[in-house]
Image 1 (cartoon, rainbow, N blue to C red):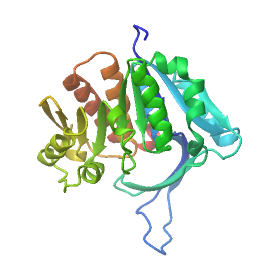
Image 2: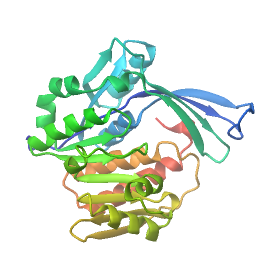
Image 3: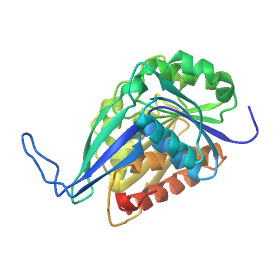
Length: 295
């Protein structure tokens, strides 16, 4: 492994269409929106950009099609200083995309079409093996096939690197993937599914969930929305950090901002407490920024 820290994100890239309106439509209802704009998305892409923004070397492994959406996403990675050498152009699927509908309070609902993200697998890991051998921290999510995550995690672990997974969207983690994970980051909904116990979205509730999950994973981070974030380690370490109070403009992307900054700080050798505090502030800043003003 190289002495210079390197974050590699293996995951999803989506072309997002953000629609602004007074409210999200109910079943059968049509709502008149106020504006819309395209943006680069996918949990993987968002987290890679957030990591690179800290100044740490960041690479992305993913898949897009050779279409307008794919070129848009590659251009964004290029502008944001994310190495996209191993973002493959898929010939069999269109680029992944999503539509997110925002209400006046900044909350949203979204639909994603995974497309080319579902083609990721062993071939992408083999092509990027030199990169994975040099990776300090690998960042995964649950928007690509589980087998792809397993292959990438095995490669990094064999080379002496560490693996962080944002287990979102909520889905069970395979028996093959679980033992390869060093750090897991989940919200209250995801924690409840994995811990198989009710989770209250408070700091105390997040800590209880984190401690339960620490019986399975070495290090656990549970985010609790506007309450803050809890950390528990298998070694008994516990950290509670209250949320930074801001006027909410949009919650979209806050989790990805948190994880990208957290990964960069951990890879750079910061303590977990320092990394959590930096990530917490970065997410709060994003939440307080209007969608149209984000770059």
